[in-house]
Length: 245
Ligand SMILES: NC(=O)c1ccc[n+]([C@@H]2O[C@H](COP(=O)([O-])OP(=O)(O)OC[C@H]3O[C@@H](n4cnc5c(N)ncnc54)[C@H](OP(=O)(O)O)[C@@H]3O)[C@@H](O)[C@H]2O)c1
Image (cartoon, rainbow, N blue to C red; front, side, top):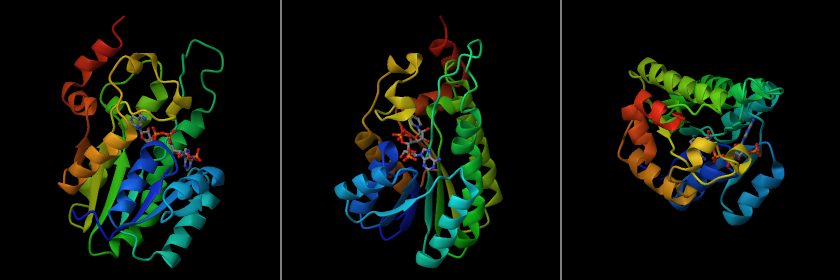
């Protein structure tokens, strides 16, 4: 696909992987709209890349999300790419007290909200000659880490949803892509990465985005970078290796 002259929404685009995708896509001549909950973070992103369009939106909040969808329909009727990137990660040892804190927020951010946003933006995307939905999953969708069980389950869910959505939309002009990052050096999970993943090699957000955009440009349905490619192949064998003590 041509990665220039598109109008792109990136959820969670003010930080980490989302910001780096936004920065590189903006540099390639795309109009890039980033959304997130923190206005301060969005404005900070804009100081680095002045061409970014920002929108405060909590994707888990119906009113906030629907206001953004309505604004996009009016202000950016040419929107032809959505990158469902926003995500949160919490450690949960189910034997411990407070293990289920923020459970609904984690499930909503990583799974329910992107599904809703996709459904709400589909009529707009369907009006374009060509459109793309990119769902950011994780290598952990294929081989979960035991100390972040709900996070991994939401990523497995978004992987499954992406497969079925691609099938449902195969006769349309809307392409559906899964992007599965490996361990990327961002603030995810408060920057305090799962014990099992810190031992694995971590890449920078810049290197990740560069490689991911090459694969996206090459029309791959599954953008699998670094360890994620192996995880997709090895699945359960890797689960044993990662959690085997
Ligand atoms: N980093 C990794 O190792 C890794 C590996 C595999 C997959 N991933 C996936 O990659 C994606 C990006 O993660 P990251 O590492 O870049 O994390 P990050 O640096 O923590 O960034 C997450 C972004 O999501 C936004 N966000 C969180 N909740 C939101 C909500 N309810 N509504 C709107 N925006 C929200 C945050 O902004 P606000 O707080 O301002 O809302 C932030 O900009 C996630 O889906 C993550 O699961 C990351």
